Length: 77
Image (spheres, one colour):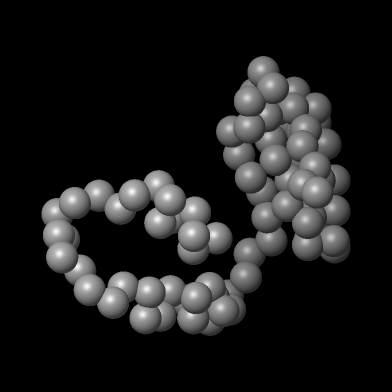
C-alpha cells in the first residue's frame, strides 16, 4: 500500500522521505488538504517491461482523431 503525507509534514522532512524512498523503492503520495497532488517514486532507466506491455496493443486504428476511451487506458494498467 502506498503511503501518503501532507505537504506541511513533508516539507521539513523531505530529505528523510527521499532517503526512505531510495532505500525501500516504495512511492510516497503528497497530499494537499487531503487530496493527492504528487507522487514521488524512485527513478528507473529500464522501461522495457512497460514498453513491452504496449507492443501490438493497437491492431487497427480506425479513427485517429478520436480520443481514447478511459476504459482502454485502465486495461493497460
